Length: 279
Picture (cartoon, rainbow, N blue to C red):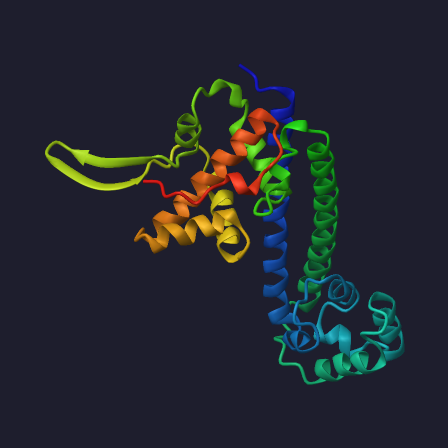
């Protein structure tokens, strides 16, 4: 049985978002690795060499050797255009000076410089595509009446809601909320074999991606002093529950509230979350 069009759309958007995000991390790591070899002193000027202004400079001067040959006037003009009021002649002169006394290896500089330029281009292109995808996700959420209430939950951002819609699918197939909790793998199971009875742990069935994003939402709620989910967590801890189990309880609470709002299309009311303890 194929999922509904809206669910299939959410799944594709979430899948592509994860893919682009992972590619961005990989490109950034590779840029860092190359920079250590080509021009390690670059970090003294740009703490984050993957920011937009730093990428522009690296594409033009990808190595200490290239920076040594740079025209400070042209470089300062480039910096002023990228970050007006932040960088200029002084920064350009600093970069050239650092390049002149760089401890870069000097090996395979030309090939590594080409790699640096390509990586910078790929990173910028992927970041641009991710931005377009995020805009598409926002339009998708704006036109989905089922998520209006969930989007009002401070602890859940657009990405969290999109993952909920993608991973939970058609909620009408669930009769009770306990089934939703079990589907996500947040139900408790006792591991046992014969006469041996082990610890009570999460079943961890279903979507690991959804559990991870609920975990992050739970942590956000704990840090928010006004969050009813955070208050719920602190109440459970005060009553003696271990912190790890209290976080899981918050994850379940977030899931149940979100699933209910998606099913009923009701508005979110923080006062109805409650702070009663659960086992």
